[in-house]
Image 1 (cartoon, rainbow, N blue to C red):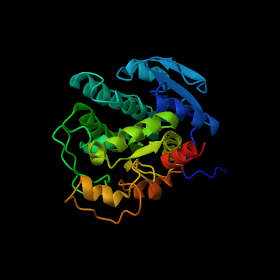
Image 2 (cartoon, helix red, strand yellow):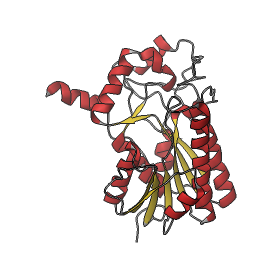
Image 3 (tube, helix red, strand yellow):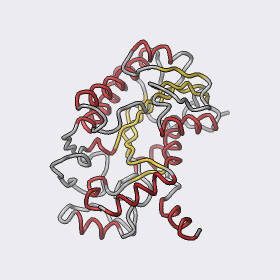
Image 4 (cartoon, helix red, strand yellow):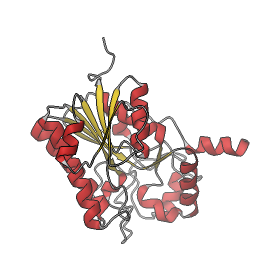
Length: 295
């Protein structure tokens, strides 16, 4: 008998499979005994996928042919930044992709989907008016203040996930990823954030190690979720090398802090990730920094 709380899928469709999270997710699912069908606009495809399709996730035809014999879907395909296309291109690509994938899954009676949302669904990090969040720690109930097409697309994606759950009875987990990286990419981002901490207060100086991101995806496929759940993710600490409460007092004076944040603990409330998914991040950039300094 399976020990998983939710039926373990035999085969998962991963969209955006050639991206950093998509490629790592594919490898992680395969390593955990789940076959992967990979769909991407272009290669190279991750070697673990035994079925691969080049296609556009805004195309119902391209998506439909990739769903053959699939039990669940992990939708990661997106334009991941507001500056990687015109506002219309970024918004339309992301929202049409998510609707197309979830609608196809729903029509095929696929019961579980995981989609990539973003910390930017709160709207603050890319907002050129530089508003401060309403409170810390940041959580899934934060009222959004979107000013860019990418952040708006993530808000709509989460609404689409709720619609899919309502219309087709699908169980959907929308993961709000912060910056995700590993190794040198994570270190480079950390150096940049620490050099300009005021620029990143709106996202709580948050990040997630790529290895934890892939584990969160697998747990989202297996958790006993019913309906749609939006879940914020973060490492247990921040990019900064100072206590988080001190950083908030300096860079977000006057913003209410609703719960004590001890040491360098995350400014993201990840309690739902733990209670719903059983997810606790295992990796920290500060472990990498310590190893680098002692090498």
